[in-house]
Amino acid sequence: MQAALLHDVSNVVPKDRMMSIAEAQSIDIIDEELRFPRIVHQKLSKDMAMEIFGCTNMAILNAIECHTTLKAGASPLDKVLFVADKISWELPGEHPYQEMMRQRLEVFDLDGAILVYLNHVWGQRDKLKVMHPWLIEARQELLASSKHLA
Ligand SMILES: [Fe+2]
Image (cartoon, rainbow, N blue to C red; front, side):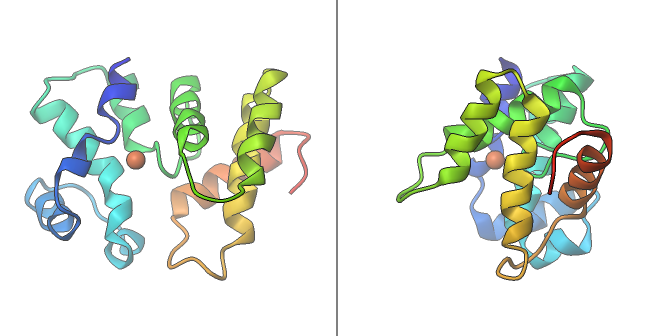
């Protein structure tokens, strides 16, 4: 519940101030986040959950921290928050990957739903500003450990 409520709490911060606040909070920022500062909101939300809301549950904090990109070695809570985040987006237009994710979830295939999304992003890598290394590593790990095809 806390993970669901707090994962996007940093969106109260104007986008053009996210990076400076993250730096002031000594959050570890990587090159990909500097190039596309919006991604840092997952780490900033974790920091705000700790500092402002007093959350000390590391399982919740970790899930918040990777809810946009996932990461290798993700916990079940990390995965559930990640998938919930992606299928709850109300996006204009057709987004077949969301329906494909729901189909995987209907048969309790959480990793399969994740791979649908990660493969969708991977397929757009030439168009995207950045590919976060956590997302790449999460995809590689799932592909290596599962029966799912790229
Ligand atoms: Fe988010």
